[in-house]
Image 1 (cartoon, one colour):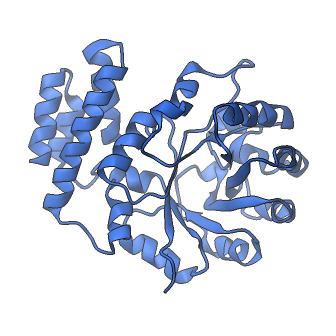
Image 2 (spheres, helix red, strand yellow):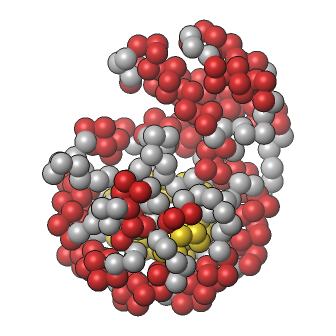
Length: 312
């Protein structure tokens, strides 16, 4: 019998912090590997927020791989060194971030048109033989064939896996995914390959795995943020009832509220702001009137009452 495919949870800045990942692993599960939002060098150092998010004591439930974003071998060495000192022996290299602020620094998908720079960055992997690296990337920045210039060097390196999101950077998350270019990469990539992009339902996952049966699995970010039970449903082999989803969501929301309330020091306003970010993605199909009530709440009691109404 074929082993079930793995589901990995793609990181999103501002959403999938350690509190979120831990609560998701405890309440929903079904995810083989979680990733930190990318760690970067800023003004020559690391941000305290990212150091806290990486701390092993903050990550006891979720199987975690830290992710880096870098433009040069020097940045790579600093960040990989931090991961190693923090006790990690796995790391993911972000060559897919489409945000202009990072891309213009030749980070994320912004490095893909600059093949020599990207190759030099990836060759730095050889300096860390005790660590296992994976790569997450897009088809290119401006054109969907840019990734193929980088494929020979990726195929020559020791990589745990590669994750490909079949869009170009300038698309950000808009427009259609390019599954034909993904198919070409799928045939030529020598590493275990994960598909990432627009996986919002069990049907979406099944369709991709049916078309690409040799995949190691899939990675979902926005899909899991909107339907946190998706990976658990896939692992169970069937969908959850609405009652099961609401019960788990209520438990999940309560746990997040407790953890953010104790972790955030800015009082009710900061807690409310943090909790409301959940609803940027969560339950997009829910009744508009109730979602609007949540998003317009300006006091914690009003917010909690609105959530209760939606999840009852």
